Image 1 (cartoon, protein in one colour):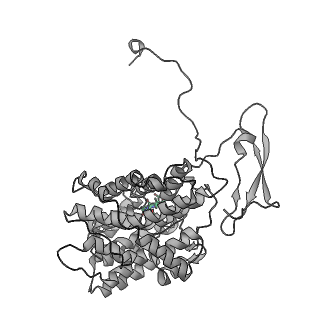
Image 2: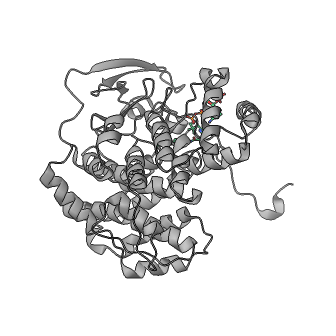
Length: 444
Ligand code: SDX
């Protein structure tokens, strides 16, 4: 971490806390820290020692867990910046590997730096040959997320030369290995699920081209990667690369704060991403659209989404931070139409249904009032499907992309001198202390 947020002349927030303990209220002055963008924060690190009080914020709706320079989101304006560069520009003009470098190394690479990074990633795309044995332990119908969470965690059993998180060189090698091997591990999970042989990466292919090649090539004949599909996949990977302190990134940081090795931390992030409220939503959107089936049934499902007694939610809608359009959804919506046209789709019923659903939802007072807009997952599944990628692989591809962000955030956390092991407190509302009752004396 180069410079800190703390300057001498920060503001103070005066708090009178009356914790109900003897001695009445305790005045406390809390520093207000200002970043370069976004809301200021109340520095509450001394709150407990000064007031005997915790703060209470389940879901961390108002809590900053760290200082970061990687990604900035303005949820009200629908702005997403990576190291200051707008996501729209990166999606249009950059490549996923260049964005991965930007996230990790703090700025866009020079030609020479990118040549070095690209070469390093390329030379780490193969996995240890024995890692292949892990796949045969799974049922063929295992969800690929179940496979990759296990295989990525197992990488720490193979790469003992890059487990020491206090060694900068080992951190770098582990980071490059994870970014490089995720496509290979992901493609192997897909091949295993369809009973086809694993395909080795090709060093003359780009990152996205290799992922497609390893998923769809067979040893039986030459396979040419469709450049339209490769370009679309690279753009989708950029859009999913990082997103501030979301649930899976916070999981990676929390795991990393204990000193766990990077492979274990990324496996933890993959497990967290799988949830349908998070990265699993792209798969859930397609399943939802298939269930709705026809635009005449949209109102029935919107009614369910608004019914508090119905667990159904409109998948691909809503976001903890965005209270405006998710800028990634805007880019994906446009890319969706372009890719479908380029691939020769005269019409894609799921896309038409999705656009009709979006139109109706955005005119509905419930969605307007709660500021529920399409998020990154609403359109990604439709493009994946048009590219021939099976639904069960959607979240896997999200994990491939997000590994770049998880790594960047993990490296930043390790390099932060103020970093401590993450250990939240709680508001305890359980039994007060009581004595053990022997079994023969317990009343029904
Ligand atoms: C991702 O954090 C990130 O950055 C995540 C992500 C990333 O790149 O890492 O952007 C990726 O996870 C995107 C989100 C994908 N998930 C979905 O599309 C699943 C559907 N969305 C919801 O489950 C929900 O919107 C969340 C989980 C995304 C956000 O939930 P919050 O912030 O906890 O909001 P909330 O549940 O408190 O909702 C506020 C209100 C509630 O109503 P009230 O209790 O106030 O009456 O809005 C309602 C919710 O019931 N609501 C929805 C809804 N989302 C919120 N109602 C119907 N359908 C929805 N989709």
